[in-house]
Image (cartoon, rainbow, N blue to C red; front, side, top):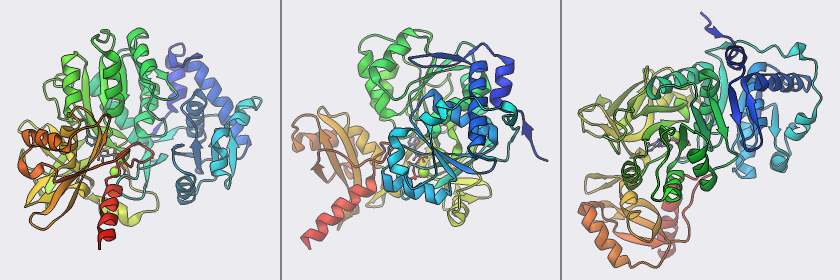
Amino acid sequence: MKQEMPNWLKQRSELTPNRTALKTKDETITFQQLFKRVQVRASNLSQLGVKQGQHVGILMRNSVAMVETIHALMSIGAVTVLLNHRLSKSELNWQIVDVEATYIIVDDEFSDNVADFHLIINEQLSAMKAASLSNAVPRHFNLDDVATIMYTSGTTGNPKGVLQTYGNHWSSAIGSVLNLGLQTEDRWLLAVPLFHISGLSILMRSVIYGIGIHLHERFDAKIVHQAIMDEGVAIISVVTTMLKQLLEELGETTYPPSFRCMLVGGGPVPKKYLIQCKEKGIPVYQSYGMTETASQVVTLTPDDSLLKLGSAGKPLFSSELKIINNGIECQPNEEGEIVVKGPTITKGYWKREEATKAAFTDGWLHTGDQGYLDAEGFLYVLDRRSDLIISGGENVYPAEIESVLLNYKGVKEAGVIGIDDEKWGQSPHAFIVTAEEISPVDLLDFCRSKLARYKVPKSFTFVDKLPRNASNKLLRRELKKIIKEQSNDKD
Ligand code: ATP
Ligand code: MG
């Protein structure tokens, strides 16, 4: 049986028309106003030829227009492809061809990068007169239908287009609220990109819960800090670099009681930042998830957020998690691959039958991440399996070593990989970006005092910057290439 629901924004605008949907630095918009604007946009898009079932790309900055466009495409029943505007021209072109997009709705400033495709320029779309709204009756949502396609960040290889259904988004929003709770006056600050699942999931929650979004075009630590201090923000989603900057901004003060959740995810979180949050009384919640799980799938609960520092928590309601090793479920504290199951998990990758098959066993998604559960069932994420270093038979996790290196004064960034070692098979090598001159000997001593011997980097390379992808994630495979090239040069 097809499971249908009324269009979420339409129903929201009927239920709580006067509640704030969006607040930007320039305007505040209620759900009713947003719905009206979305109807106009949907009708104009239909007039331009956009139809149900087509793949339509969005290449825009966070803005009210981008929010309207996402809702408008959902109203029409087109599949929204969220494109990352930080990608290079060739990366974008590859994704657009791969996804077979019929149109790209684009902020004019990015149009040169996608000039070969059928474009709808956002600025022109916004200037269009309201067409007849007769063709703008929002479609019901079938929970099995694909709502969005979002490419993975491409940290471990080529990005893959993840099919995200309405049911995935719905279940994700419900799982989150059953964990974090809901107050009608909640405001969620959105300064992560809307083209990532971290940002898009906030938009879905906003209409489903009826809470407002403080929409920021980009993350600016000073502006975000001020918003938390003065504007009644209750929740914010951040990645580690944002958390670090917010802690610096906060200094010796603390956030007001209206602020109830700093949700941090997207990658490893060095423990020192979590400890600083605890010391400052910041309600920090580490979470774990990925594009394939339509955002967080494991999160700490309010009861445990400061008690289980370093853990990503337990699966959200209706999701399940196991740790497996060679196909067998691990015991508590035993390390293995994290596998997850539940209604938020993708049907698969667009046009990647082999990759989809390889990713699933009996409905369980193999995340490619390594971790363990403690005796109480709390998840600790260690690292990506592909980055695991095996040294003398011991598993060594680059993220743990990087986290220690970041504690050394003057170390700004660190990236660790395994290099060939005659005696141990592999040993860790660290790439370091410094803020000031530091002595490698002292740094080594520091590592020896904090890490087991086999985890201490065998050697260091000092660099000006580390290779990162358009999501700012460290590309350890590029670091491996550097070492390989160096050893080829020697041969
Ligand atoms: P690709 O799949 O193309 O290599 P990606 O995995 O970086 O890219 P995303 O879906 O954006 O793409 O990121 C999800 C990944 O981020 C997870 O699989 C995991 O490796 C990492 N991650 C997310 N949350 C955490 C966390 N709390 N701790 C450690 N790693 C995390
Ligand atoms: Mg991934």
